[in-house]
Image (cartoon, rainbow, N blue to C red):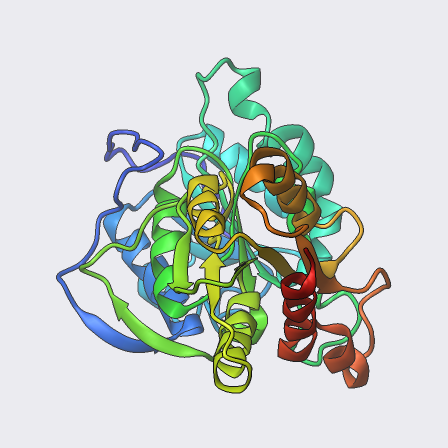
Length: 353
């Protein structure tokens, strides 16, 4: 690995949290999520030579999922380079580079591999700006291929979002489609604060229109993916496709009208969009694939119940994974919450007084 001691001399003003990142000429393309992420990295590296990409096998190989394919050939091994398989060191290097004026975008190869880096993330990355009273920013975007649904081995299908969301000082985002993958990554790299960027692996090959000249909403903004009147389904990442599939089945077979809210950003949370939706429907189901106990849905359900009690016609229900380790590939279809389990929960919440 080539040692880098000093950042480029070209300087740029520090962006605000809601700053729109620089983008190329308007262009709409049909891309997979992998291609959209690759394009976002290319555009960010082109726009700012302080942006560095590194991690295990991200260089010549282009990453396990080929998200970083071609970046080393285009930008050189000083801008996109491989690291040892040592996640704590990867995040430690990112922190040091950020202090030196770079904008690091490290990749943790799989979600379950992020745990060795937990101390660096929680004790240093998340707290450095507060520790220095705002004098030192941490513009680090940690990319993590996350969640299950791809038939992988143990430690390759973890839901880590609750660890990061619980840690003050971190932003946490989860794209659900190629357009959001592109724009949320551009916004994350432009932000002065550390961002945990969780990429739902089972959506890597989903395709969609990505318009690089028409910015999507930034971090901290949710989106209503389908309007409805009977029940609000709040979800994120791979759960969005599940919710939309269930909503279509519900409309065709039962005449139920489900509204699907894609959080996009877990921290900061756009609770205003959730509130507006629940005020329209009066009922809410929270969907995520991580285990139920102390999952992110528990915090959502608690806050909705506390702040919107008089808007609710029934208790908030949750559809989640089970409180067990992630199962072998042959059992993951039974473990992951799918449209059937979601619709069972929707039926319950409609029947409750």
